[in-house]
Image (cartoon, rainbow, N blue to C red; front, side, top):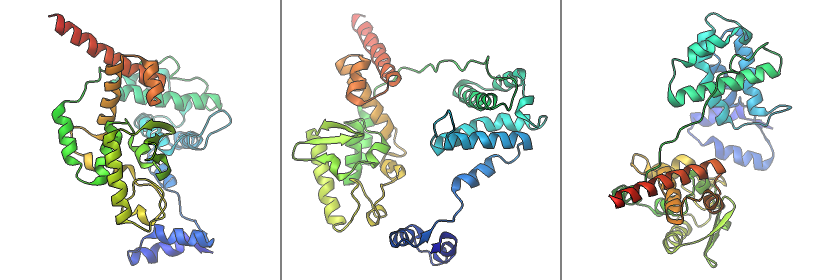
Length: 329
């Protein structure tokens, strides 16, 4: 068996790709991954500076978030990172005078959240409630100091449609076959960046003009079909022998079977006013304006959850009412 710690330094010294070597060794069945997970290094760094008692309790909570527990499902690492980052400022402040979470009072929580505003206040209070609720459930504290602090509803502003000039700038920035296809998938089919990166060749049915995104089949319009054919032709000529079955590949992923990164997918639109996310939101809003502010229709067509569908419907209703008032005037 060949261990990760044995090959890491030599490969780095010769500037050789570690991932490709690991892939080959895994296929041969002789690789053993003894590297320290990045989560562990990150967790140690984020817990630095906390009082010993608070540190141990917060570490246990973070691990339960990631791995799950008897009454909780495991969360994605990104969710754990965000939650710990949200509670860290308050825990650092309380570590100056306390050694355990059970010493934190309701007044301490109120004093901390009064210094916060808007999204920052809501996010930190929600993360603190998660931490103290878990501690109370596991008998680490006697009373939950956040139980009477209400997070409150998030008041969203009315979504605004993009201007034609903004869309033209994004179109001009898409200068490659891959970028043009990505732009169409976001602007026409309201696909998220992660959904675009996860598309497989089997998700495209050119004969029946169908495209499956996140498990939902939808018709291929003329524009997307033209850009899809252009990309597939370029893909076939550029990487004729690739074994990667993902629809969108690049120089790095063509030599593997993994998907392209979200960073690479969204790179052509980075720095533009109209990012891929804004184009996706604009397409959803256009659907609500065209077919009426019906959240059930939006949820069925685009697979949105009920809260998101209601937000688009509310924005569309406000825009339509505003347009009617201006017409009457």
